[in-house]
Image 1 (cartoon, rainbow, N blue to C red):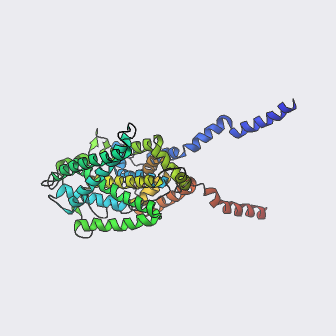
Image 2: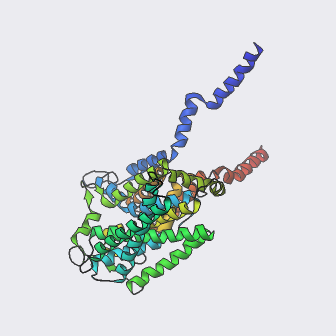
Image 3: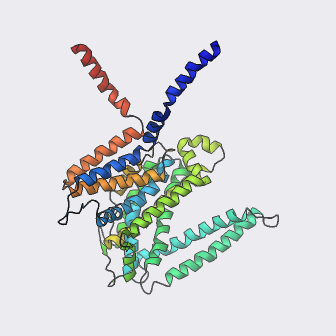
Length: 430
């Protein structure tokens, strides 16, 4: 009987700690607070939005919502790559410069004929990246069905041979377009590999040199910006793109509305979120990314090729940034060296608002999607209510700081001195 009596309080305490239905509901709300925050922001947008002459809420109009998705797509593409980097405990400050270089390469390939500086950079890098990818993929696939007659050394040789053939064919295809101008398929094929190569170079220097990502990517940010300006032949030169005149008409495809509602740049962003969410959640590579961010040394000691994962992560970040450069050119019909100015900070802010820890090892691609949308809708609400740009910057800064404090769990520590002062004041007044 005594044991039963002693067991009952323990059970009651456990039930109290669990909280029953109320506790479960509270845990659900806390675990989904980011989505509730987005819902609250949307509610504020609806309630504060002006209406047009027909009495339609401007914020909820399909045109406004599609415009928000279009505006956040470039930042969103960069934020997807930044999420991968931050999950490993790193940072990538070079994405803005890579975006700018991608926009210039795209604009020049669309508007200029022959072997311009853009073609000289893009086509060889396109071939080299394809060669390395095929040379790596073929042995990886072949290892699963290799026989004693095809040892790993033979598989690597086969991979290199196939890679050379694929790269040569791809470069011939790209070079065949040079007497004229590149179309949409051409720029989508040859520009992102340039960003992939630059990002992989970031990762190689960081991983093999054991250097801080902040310093390496800061140096690359400055260097790539210089390359972007040299490509155009003069500082701050803008390369205009006029569809149907100095550029192919099909560039309009990258700025069209699908079904009259979904902007194509937004479709690229949503597809990137979905693809990399699956990559992080269901593959060995995704588990390695989280493990490196959680404890790099332990992950290295467990036999994981940490350096390869880092190179891949930074390469993917650069690829997505250069793809965002192509979308920038299609949206704004120009390429320029300062196209990505400040976008690395916006991307980091969106990732942090989305719940990814700057310390690494914690976060999700779904959170980044919500973070990007929060950033976009916040700007849209402020613009619809005619809030001046300086006030917008102040509010955005405050929201970013609050998000970091909440995500890192430091809000309580920051407020503890204030609570202590209030308790001391109340005791003194009493």
